[in-house]
Length: 618
Image 1 (tube, rainbow, N blue to C red):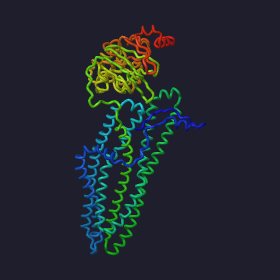
Image 2 (spheres, rainbow, N blue to C red; image 1 turned 90 degrees about the vertical axis):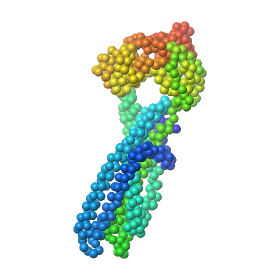
Image 3 (spheres, rainbow, N blue to C red; image 1 turned 135 degrees about the vertical axis):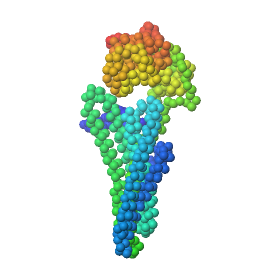
């Protein structure tokens, strides 16, 4: 399974090569070309999405397809009758009555063909959109189930492009491509039969160029498929960079790196354009190939057709009809070539889509997983070891027991393992070794939903969704009433600032809550957590972005929030830590000290040093 990272580090470019340095800033590992033969298994898997709609589509669309094809193939024959029987009959007697009759018949056939086409296109578009809806829904649902390690290795833009661009690229295939394939196959079959019935010698002579055309075209297929894969890969990289650029625009402008960003985007944009040009050029190679082959077929038609007319084996009207049929013969051949190219583009996208669909979540329910009953909050870590990457342990044999209702502060330098402990407790990752128990249940033996539904997390970087303030708080418990939402906000002292907003609780906020201060966003996250009423509460640097005055306001609210709950507090501020029932000091993935604030201060160890260092910088 390949992986992708957004910024893997800057590669040193040659001296004086500013452009090369910019171009090598990012190292992408995910989107590699998949050089393999056409995968029929994947083809069937993709078109399995049409199976639920086959009963709706086949009878009506099939009928309209046959009706449209029959009317189209009848017109050249009526034209030959008009020439041989009405305009230039053998007896020399022109028949205007027959000519008018045949003309009216042709007009009627064109009207029928138009009506059948309109119905077919409208119906197939509806079915095609339903297929795309199902595929996109399945992909999104699957992504929601994937574990943290999947997202750790991929920028958001890479995931986004699979759900949007790659799925959208399949729309033409499902809305038009499949039905056009049916039409062209039926039309080709009908034309071949008619040509052989009119004159088998001339029919075989014209079609002798078809095997030559397919022999040449097969040489292009593999190159075209890889070329479109490269296009998708380059587009994915652009989307990844765009996402990072937008998310990090403040940092970019703060460090005046706009020029670097623009130059790098220009390089990626030009690279994408070149890959598109290459794929498009190969794609267009089918058109001239068909035209040249058709030209050779037309030359054979008139050379041999003229001879057959002179020999009396063919009439002028039949030669004109034959010419029309041959023209109609090369059109579906051309469209089938384009259809194959379209299919190659679709396969390039489907390979990327199914790559994600085949990704198995690292964290999932066991077949015999049980529902975790309402918990008291008794937590035990037993010799827990964890590695984000093999050979680089983040935790080294953690033993920790937390009683129900007890608050535990996790303290230590950056990288000491504080966040890893809470990530394992929430089962965002599974430990490499050891066991984590909640009320005696190994958390790997219970369903993920029943576990996480009883755990609340307040992060330092609070995520605010687009929508109203009320909806953001209600995200903690979607069935909460308006009164419960407001009660939660009042409990954490968020009600006053909310009511000062233009529309109070109904005020719309943008993505990530850019219109709110950091402190206000944190207060909303406290209200969200309180509304969820979890048995285990995790505060991961939850007060780091709150000013001192705001922090004083929420200290009493925190007492309400923590009361009766087992809680883990990751923080650096002494005011948040010292009130904890138990303090655990971590260093390089190991517990070095534990006890109350007073006990640890008396010991003169690591914790005492951290506290004294904090006071020195106040």
